Image (cartoon, rainbow over all chains, first blue to last red; front, side, top):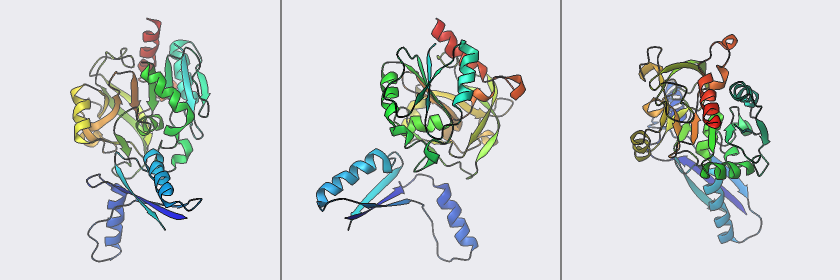
Length: 79
Length: 231
């Protein structure tokens, strides 16, 4: 099974990298950009076909390592 | 004073910390590999040195914060043992849950490497008893992710309990403004745990222990620990 975990900064957490990208897009003349927040994407191959078990493992992975839940949210998608 | 310096793949300041400890205590620390499960028997102080553990992959300190040896460091801290984390060591302490908050990318996105003044907030802890409270010291900083952030409740608790160890200031001791090199909330350069036995700080006191290297203002931190251990 293929899974995708997306980690994003929580609302209200200052994201200097996102701000810099936002500024760069403006200076490149890309119109209509209100704001940019940078995050991370993890593409993960899961052994077996038990979706519930995969979801549980991925949740553990997020809580233990992939996200710092002080400042980040995560979203798990399993194909 | 029995000290153990934890070495992760990518640590690079362990020898400097070792030198500073040796100078202050007369003893060479033990060097403990990250994959070990225990600290040497009788360890008083565990030190997490600076560097780029695991190449700063994922988040600075994230992977090191979950290494085998960190369970031993957590148990040591829970017993009241002393823990010092410098620079990447501070990042590892927040990632491992031993200290609250998080160290984000510097506000101006630049790696900053320079001499920096700090105000020593209190002189009654095991780490700072050889300083006077309010003293301005000059050490150095070298980091890209030193921007200390915590939620308002955590920040209020840190301030209310007097757990800020050092703040960024200028040569006159004036805190904040342009003297803040990375955007840290409340100009925080270092914090203590609730029992004051764990200290995490971004600046490098171990760099400033020899006049040849530009100053000796970092010495008192290691002397503080040595005094405490001898008492």
